[in-house]
Structure formats: structure tokens, C-alpha cells
Image (cartoon, rainbow, N blue to C red; front, top):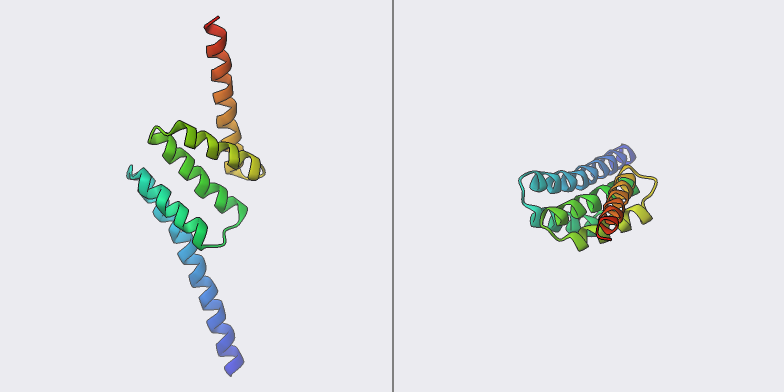
Length: 117
């Protein structure tokens, strides 16, 4: 009976940890949706440091930070994070999104430098 109880408790703890970890992503997204970009960044930072996320989840949180920086008009911070995400997590959805944004930025730079000559 004890081994069954121990197994049950272990499964419950793992499930609870997963809910807390996923809840941090949801809280960061909620703050972003509310326009609280600084709080979204802070929550994402705390979550990234506190929980063990897979590559998709890490890329998602980092992308949320990058877009938050962009909304706060910290374009250098946003671009640095987009570059990191595209480099570190190229096989994820958010790695692809970051690479697409970087290509768009590079395209705009090329167009604007071509117009100024």
C-alpha cells in the first residue's frame, strides 16, 4: 500500500510543478496583453531562472521578452533577443518567428540604405 501511495504523491507533485511552470508563461502573456511590458519581462526572467523549460517554452518566453522590449521602444534589446532566439532555438516556432523578423529588419535596412544614395 505504501509504494502505491508514494507513487501517487510523486505523480501529483510532478503535475503540480508542471502547472506552476505553465502558469508562469500564462502570467507573462497576461501582463503583455494588458500592456504591462516591464512586468511581462520580469515574470519571464523569473520563470526562466526558476523552472526547467523545454526549448519551445524557453524560446516562447524569450520571444515574449523581445516583443515587450520592442513595445517599450528598446529596439536594440529586442533585436539582441531576436538574434539569440534565432541562433539558439532555430527549430522552434519562435526561432522561426525571430528569424523572420530579423530578415524583415535586414530587408528594411537594405531598402533604406539604397534610397539614401
